[in-house]
Length: 190
Image (cartoon, helix red, strand yellow):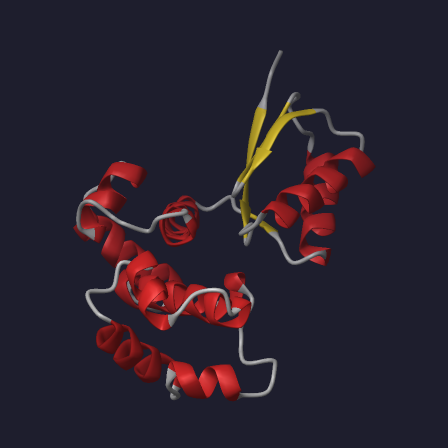
């Protein structure tokens, strides 16, 4: 049976997977799996079906990726999200080696492509995602700043605080005292 692999931009969480599944169900498109960034459809889609799915996905904040460069940049984003969101963020190698392994391309090529497509560097994107995760952990109010620094693989609490202030303009303590609404959706972080 023919299959179609759909690459989908802005899928960042389990709710995104559920939303894409709902779209496929609504249009009665059989699928074998939906995961972050992709769905495997159990048929070859005609132009009408592809257009309907594209429109439905765009209506809920997603986008079908059909350009190879955009797809490669999205793979880098997904790999970074997996790294930042895993239970123990303890990366055993440097970011460039991790991305080369995850994406199957040389880091220099990934870095240039990512900057061209996304308008920011891989490193800035990685830091922005880490800081957003730190914000979530601060909001949860279950861990101390030192525990968060350890969990997020920072060398020290001071380094985490300095990077947090550089990115957000406030210290972690100020962030905890601020009014709600200072966090960003993951798919809008660049």
